[in-house]
Structure formats: C-alpha cells, structure tokens
Length: 212
Image 1 (cartoon, rainbow, N blue to C red):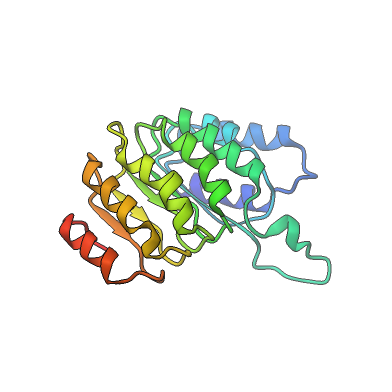
Image 2: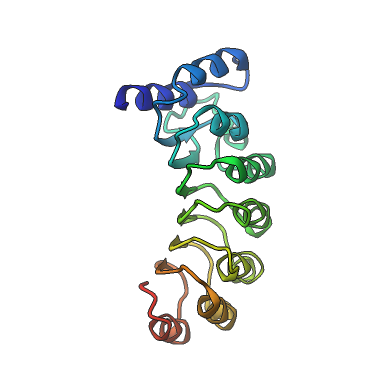
C-alpha cells in the first residue's frame, strides 16, 4: 500500500500540463484499489481531480497544495502557486462522488472567498467528509458567513473538525458563526488560530463547547 501511495504521489507531482493524460490515467488505474491516502505537497499541474478521485476508489484522505519547492529562472509563479477557479470547480465536483473520502486538506492554496463558495457547493453534497482543512489561505469573515456557516449548520453536515488557521477572519463573523455552531449536528473542533480573533468569538466558542 505505501509503495502505491508513494508512487502515486510522485507521479502526480511530476506530472505537467504538457504530459499525456492517457499515461497518467493508465497509471492511476493500476493503483486503483491500493491508494487510501494521497498527500500532494507540491503539485504544479492543474490536473482535474474528478478523474483522480474516480480512479482511486478507496481514497479516504486527500491533501493538496499547489506549488513547487524547486525554483529557477524559468519558474512561472502564475502557473505554480495556488489554486485557480477551475481547480475549485474540479475539486467541488470530485468530492461529490468520492464515496470513501473522509479528510480533505487544502492548505496554502491562496483560496479566497469566491473560491471557497465554489468548494462549499461540492462539500454541501458530500456525506463522508468529516475533517476539512482550509488553513493558510485568504478566507475572510465574509467567506465564513456566506460559505462556511451554511455548510456546518446544514442538518446533513457530517463535518466534525474544521481547520481555518492563518486566514483573515475576525469578530465580524462571530454572530453568524455562533448561530451556525448551535445548529451544527456534528461539529466538535474548530481551529481559528493565527486569525484576528477577539474575546467575543472566543467566548462563543467556549459557550458552544467547541475546542479551538
């Protein structure tokens, strides 16, 4: 299993938009039943995750960070740093059909409020994702109010752990987040560290019995 997961990680991180997609599809089919956890820390192609998740039928954990550790004079930062809107639509569609996926982590992807809204549409359909990590992004209180609150307050939500550390969230989201947490049927833990969180929101978290 570890061999297949490592091989899959290496193949996807080395894949470029110029490489034949058919070869990647064939490789993923070989790994089809053996990959349970996929952690991509330097993905620099914008491969569609719909077919990745469809191919890896037993995938339970997916972590994706778009970027690269290898820099040089030919590095195109616009192509290698962060997600784009097409990536968000692809992931939103993928999570709707990933029946085994329980953990989705998208740290350090420059996700803003508009991108979050797209992702939230797909996440609202998922009945399996219990852990959601959106840390180190560009999500503001506006995004929390319009996308996160309806997501966790939904009666069909199964999210128990939400990581929003190091974003741009402040007490403007306090009242809406409080109401959402009271309605949430599943939330147990929320990480709001490295945000501009004041006493008001901290009091709300404690009152709701939510770890933060």
